Image (cartoon, rainbow, N blue to C red; front, side, top):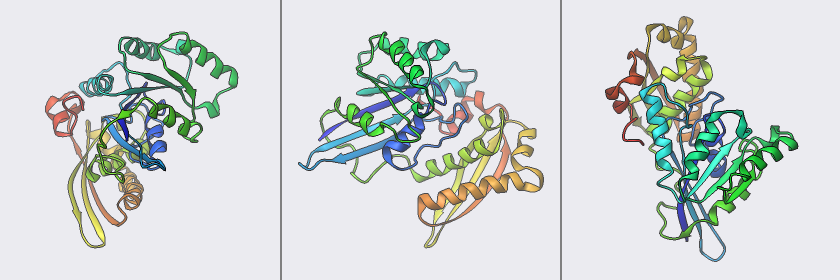
Length: 299
């Protein structure tokens, strides 16, 4: 069997997590229309057996968007993404616009030019892109001469995703299976549950408040027909706490209801979810807080 590791990189909000979920056929990475939704590297395991008994297992690593950091959390996220470049067998670089539209993609291409790892460019959101724009983007990146393959995809619609997976598999080499065939992520359910809550916060709230929020699972008890989960939502300001809770607690109830419904699909049981909101000022610039919330060691 061919095996290997694949890094998915790009600017914030270009569709990295959406691509990972589409490749796996299940949602393991949260997605919103807000930049910097992904904070940790998320590993998704794709396994495909062929008729001859061989096949491929690829571990896709979804990384935080590479950006200019303004906080220690931002630095952790960017360092986590760039560290992936040195650890994988293939890199998929996702873009959704012209190279000349901003400095972010050019900075990433300069990073990629300095490494020898095979690189595939995926031009995302072609379902919303005029053909002339796609042709110009393709030409701009092709002229750099650093990509083994360039392809257009729609991660959301699934367009050309199978073809992208097949192109990626061509770079894998014979090796041992790293994970069981039926495993799609190495992350524990507690982690995914905390991410579901954070996704709903991102969806329900606007502006800066969601980016100053962290979620910690304090209890996770599985019983016969129900999973009881206790979660603490940390925010940076007292005013943010009031916004998260909402008038009469309506905002927090809405977040909880939406999160609970998705958790029940994930876990296959009824879920009893309790959530509390606490203030931890400036946690995004606190080494101790970042460590306690799991943001440490560039992972």
